[in-house]
Length: 169
Image (cartoon, rainbow, N blue to C red; front, side, top):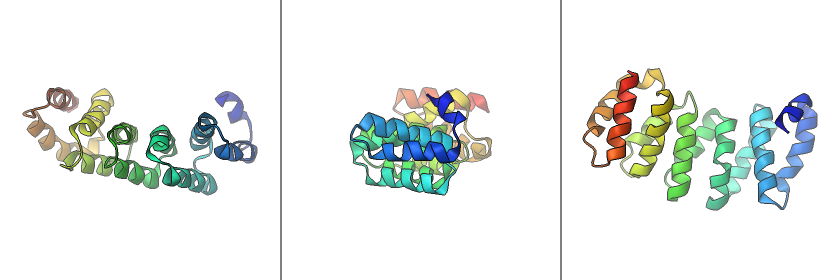
């Protein structure tokens, strides 16, 4: 489907997908949102509509839209993912993983790691992503002391992931 959608003009893609954001089936709305974010996310009207969709979502629906924000990218999406880390555990975990996969938003991710009110599960979601691909290099001087401190964490996964990330340096 994605290959076919890429062959359409932006205008035709928008005409076909935007109405699906109001479909009665959640799965259709979610898939349309993902395609729009990935293929037409730079369009200000599309961005606005997708961000509004997130803003109006209940927590259950928001969990399904986390990947839409990740694909959409940008400061507005990163800020919403960061704010979601203070909501339900599932939404917080999903949002943390998505934000950690976004390049160029290290400040929000680092703020989440430093936030004592955020659960260790959220920290693990971020660290797990960074252990796979390494954190943004410009964060190294700020992350290194935190990771060294976490080598003494009571949570074994945080100790293990911190060590893996330190190996990137």
